[in-house]
Image (cartoon, rainbow, N blue to C red):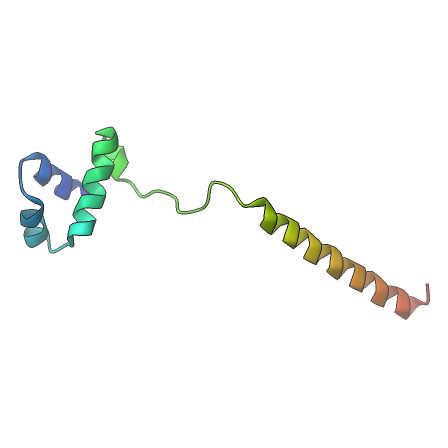
Length: 84
């Protein structure tokens, strides 16, 4: 579908014609047209990963603090049961 949309636009069709013929919304047409314009390759029409490129450091520090707290609680309860 993406390739058909881009092909029609390259042939000179208007966005509205593409929308009417293929039954898609204007946002869909513009999204894929703009992606194709960025690189002018058909590979640009493939899905992109939605995973973040980086994970914010603050979240890691929070996760580490939670894990450390849970480990300390676990150690305390284990020591209470064993009498250490």
